[in-house]
Image 1 (cartoon, rainbow, N blue to C red):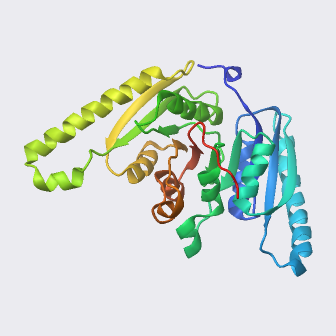
Image 2: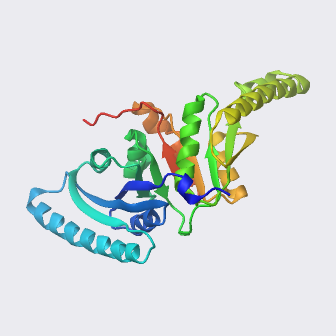
Length: 307
């Protein structure tokens, strides 16, 4: 059984709020993560840049009042915990996703925490919500809170891509261990595979040929997953593996539900530009459809430059 002090705890979080019920849930979740003594939770609200000048002053004043109340509520929750947690708050103005990423960088935050909104407008379905834009543009890990259950995470599931090198998978495992309860001693790695041109080949190959083709591809994927498993370092933690065929988006969400996972952790290599706008990415699809919370990490070296 690992000792709590053997695992790093979070010191600095940025929590986005638009004063919705979803954002309030994200704020509460932030305080229940494994936080270090003296950790700071920065509660941030961004006033959109397109508000008419004649009402901007009133909007900013109202936002400050609401944010102050939200921070006071969090401070009360923090005082009831065993750790000395600081709650800070700030009003920003501009494009919400750009300002949130900038603030997280400025604060050297280890995690951006956001709520996942329910119904989306046509524009949001096309180009993404603020939450999805932050995930798409931030090099920092993001936690998207959806589940109303706020107990400590005890059942993580890490989805991995076999095109990733071991350091990327290691970073995903490390992120999961920062977020889960100290007593968690097993982290499962899930890879969802599809043999290339599987649908087309099913119609042109004989059944035996097609089955052999899939078996060979699955064997190669299994060997690669085992290699990655062997390269992961996680003190006093078992790394299990699971290999499942199918559509990665649907299988990841389905496996999380089947296993009773309370936290999904995955990386994102989403498309950019107009292709991304229409097609999205596995990570963003999972964020929209998973019933549990989702933590997302960009590849090392990713850097978004705001316009």
